[in-house]
Amino acid sequence: GQNIDQPTEMTATEGAIVQINCTYQTSGFNGLFWYQQHAGEAPTFLSYNVLDGLEEKGRFSSFLSRSKGYSYLLLKELQMKDSASYLCAVMDSNYQLIWGAGTKLIIKP
Amino acid sequence: GAVVSQHPSRVICKSGTSVKIECRSLDFQATTMFWYRQFPKQSLMLMATSNEGSKATYEQGVEKDKFLINHASLTLSTLTVTSAHPEDSSFYICSAREGRESDGYTFGSGTRLTVV
Image (cartoon, rainbow over all chains, first blue to last red; front, side, top):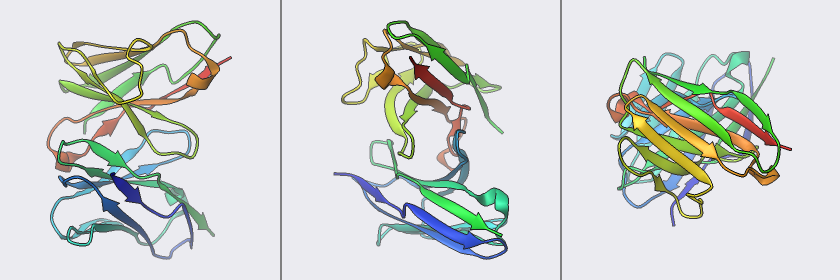
């Protein structure tokens, strides 16, 4: 079956750096997405990786290793507003999005 | 960037009644829209893929007669929850993609449905 694994919850300190990991096993691969979702709101797009390596976008970076079925989202200079759930999703060979359960990130002052 | 408008944001209905949720793509045409359901603290679950001008494709276990999808134009898809029951209470979200995968999928603001 298809599977996306990410930690359920993480805690970090304001101003620090946090890395959220995502491992996947899917039938085919056509890209990996990271989304941010605040409680009670819809997800918002953060990043898309289809080739191995690191993509940087301001305070957020996303890394992909296709051979390892692994990605991480790196958040730098954490702010209180970064407290949210972070969803990892993989597009399989049928171009279907397979979603992880999300990682709830708690930022403490 | 792409915007997807979803209405209503919240709805409370009585058991046995039907509820219609609208999803509109603003400033872009969406031949395909996706409908998700999300229960508290759980992942997004794809319910169906809505295709303009043709029948929707439903995921396994989703009753097509209960969750009616209509994609009558390139900018509007609707989901109607028929004969709603308390177990249908959930967060329903639509999404669409304007451009390439690298642009990501844009989500509507979601609809919180409560069936009493």
